[in-house]
Image (cartoon, rainbow, N blue to C red; front, side):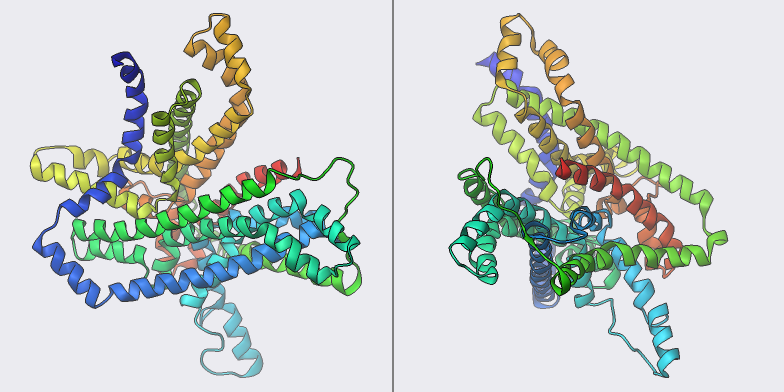
Amino acid sequence: MPRRWLSLAPMLLVAAVLTLPVLAVLASWTQWDAQTAQILREMGQTVLPGYVGTTVALSAMVAFGVVLVGTATAACVTLFDFRGRRTMEWALLLPLAMPAYVLAYAYTDFLQFSGPAQTWLRESFGLRGRVLPEVRSLWGAAWVFTFSLYPYVYLLARTALAERATHLMEAARLLGAPLSRRIREVALPMARPAIAAGTALALMETLADFGVSSYFGIQTFTAGIYKAWLAMDNRIAAAQLATMLLALVVVLLALEQRAQARMRFATSRGARPAGSDAQPVRLQGARWLLALALCALPVLMGFVLPALFMLRPLAADWSVLPWNRFVQWATNSIWLGALTAVLAVALALFLAFCVRRTPRTLQRGAVQLVALGYAVPGAVIVVGLLLPVGWLQQAAPDSSAGYWITATALGIVWAYLVRFCAVALQSMQSGYARIPQSFDDSARMLGTGAMGLLRRVHWPLLRRSTAAAALLVFVDVMKELPATMVLRPFNTDTLAVVAYQLARDERLGEAALPSLALVLVGLMPVMLLSRTLRK
């Protein structure tokens, strides 16, 4: 027994380090005092109902939007065959490369009162005052989130429909069912678990957002956490608000996992038989134009038009852009992303290997706790990291923990690992799922130890999974805003932080440069995903 616990110690230590911020947020409820109670009581009587109402309203609008857009586009490219379909299959993934806050900057620059759209309308038609609705509003945020997050629903619904829908719709056609009934009663019910899972993922991203809500002035839970921390200077109140947000995320995560389980159950039986000649319905004429327009609209709104909106100020003011500082911002972003990617891949490989070697309940539970980190909003992680620092400084005023967490790269890399190690872990576990257990048994029979098994058997087969994991973590770190903005060391601005600061100062032309750089970086995993789906 002691030897077993000794072998488990490194794994449990890694899991504890990666889950400490979440545990610290939960532990904040043990630090109750009169000042915190008064602040929460006053917030409950004034702004907290507004936070809840705005968050619920925004989530409902985003859920409706991503379900509508994601399901419609997935059904078009899966159930129908039309000219341009192959292009639309990968083009519909492009909005994944566009961070939601970059989308917000682009639309604000183009649609605001002094922007090109309203200026042209006033000059062309002799109108006065505001012509278009204010984009910095709740509906504007819902628009931004819908066209940046619908690919979650599109991807999962497309996978679910592609596995069995075409074959079953062909069977329904042979039984005399019209096309509308086949879609309504055969295809969409099959995709319902996938749609629910994609919607839950989109809503988790919406709840975790800080850039859009802060820039648009929308009073969501995330904005409330930062106000309680920075404006009211009360860490306990911020942590307890973060706990409420975390509870919402846990509910969404449970719904997503339940939907994923139902989706696996639905697709584990009755796969399309070999030799099936069922084909998607061929569209021509007006139906072809309608399907093409339906698929092209989200791509235009979520990627093409925002990219053009940002290129316009770049072309107009090319000479005054801060190119020398841009190199420094890009360097900071790249080295933070590269460092985090290397550490995250190493930790994920270690955890996945431990579970592979001894797949017991304790090991699996520890890995599942680490995997929850991606669902935790960056604001919650920031509070969870800084809260223990405050406790430690109160207990030991001479401690240098605050310096190491806030003045060096340790704190920000720790926050990145808590949030994005789950991404690398998922890729590693997917890679291990493709390695037969018989390889491990054969290596043990030949006398290969644990390190030899990892180096000589697993590593050659995990190189592609490792590269994919490193790329995904690198891109996620480049785009991360709330944790970077609070925990970055002095004079270590990144592209995401600078884009937010320039946009907040109404210097949208200058914000276009770092924003477009983030979009270009985000295209890398989208291209990888598109290539994987084609295979």
